[in-house]
Amino acid sequence: MTTEVAGRASEAATAGKTIEINPVTRLEGHGKVTIHLDDNGNVVDARFHVTQFRGFEKFCEGRVFWEMPVITPRICGICPVSHHLASAKACDAILGVELTRPAKLLRELMHMGQFIQSHALHFFHLASPDLLLGLDYDPAKRNVVGLIETNPEVAIKGVRLRGFGQAIIRAIGGKKVHPNGAVPGGMSMALSPADRDRFLRQIDQAMTDAEAAIAIIKEYYDKNRDFVCTCASFPTGYLGLVDKDNNLELYDGRLRLVDPEGKVLEDQFDPASYLDIIAEYVEDWSYLKFPFYKKQGYPKGVYRTGPLARLNVCEAISTYRAQSELKNFKQLGKNGIVEGSLYYHYARLIELLYALERTQQLLEDKDICSADLIVGSDKYNEQGVGVIEAPRGTLFHHYWVDNTGKILKVNLIVATGNNNWAMNKAVYEVAKEFIKNGRVTEGILNRVEVAIRCYDPCLSCSTHALGQMPFIVQLVSADGVVLAGLTR
Image (cartoon, rainbow, N blue to C red; front, side, top):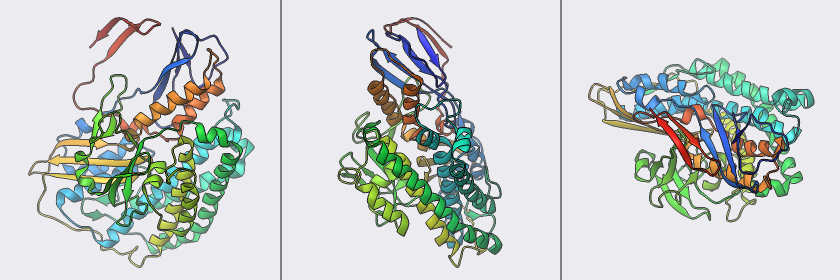
């Protein structure tokens, strides 16, 4: 028997049943959770299912590579800039060109706009209703509308920050969503001095809003220390980009992988060779794959990416305010490694602060309004890899082409996919902790959703497959035995 729960439940006798949360709310894309109980009503298994399927890897085959920076942003409306820039970087590699300095600055500035708007959206609109209104608050109002009613100043800060990031994206990329400013070999348009000056006038207010958000999350942690420290806390590896000095790096850099104790497994690794260290495992109950570190195998080699992982991987941040917060963050864990999933929120806001500080640096650079933006090439390499840190984690675009520039094969490892194992583990740990003797409440199920929302998953981005996906219907007994099935 299955009990369907769309984010809500009342106390009920649920022994021997499967509880379903469908859909999981306040995230991008479509997914569900199934929680399996034994005859005593205790959790024996729990899974986070990604139920939507998209085939970008396959239907991009046969296109010419220079179309990809325009095609791939359509993967997602929340983080299109990340796909736009990762794709452009892969195309640069196919051309075999080194960008001009002004082009690099502009791309990074657009990327900072993406981090500002995405991190602000997640914290203020998706996560803060749980933190400020309460995990057991009326679900009809536990959302951004309820937040506006009870904490309008907080909601305004979120809208203002997101608008600032989107304005940067539009000024550089042409549009707030699905930008087209980056092209193979550089950028298609320069930043105007008027836009530069306008953004510089707004930066102080944006930093004030970001620091207010950090104060909110730190206050929440102080008041809910036991829950925060134990909620979905488990060991994994951590993967992220760093610069040559192992500082936090979001646009460029080399890969660094550390184990749960902070031991460095891969240091300053060339992102173009990612397939030498990363592979993907497939489970038959999800369209989302499970990346892992090849040298350790699956599941021992699973790792996390995104804000928490990036701060665990880096040794420092190159901007003053974010570095001060990083020092506090590092003290939350052993050997500088912080495990708890709820600490993703603090890490995300530290990155937001860094993105704002880096934005100011870029805007003040003498070359930021230069029109020296494009480099040409008359040859095509057989393949190109573009790697970037998307807000949700490390993003890989890899294209193989023929001598005419036609794409033969595409491989995408999308940020959310890297965290697939961790999200499933988080769901299981929270469900096991709070569901006892068949007692299930709406607030308990919301805690399961909260664990997923820590990772800010973008499910539209992350589902893709090679070949044909079967459609399977199964009839399963209460003890998990498959009684009948149909595949087509």
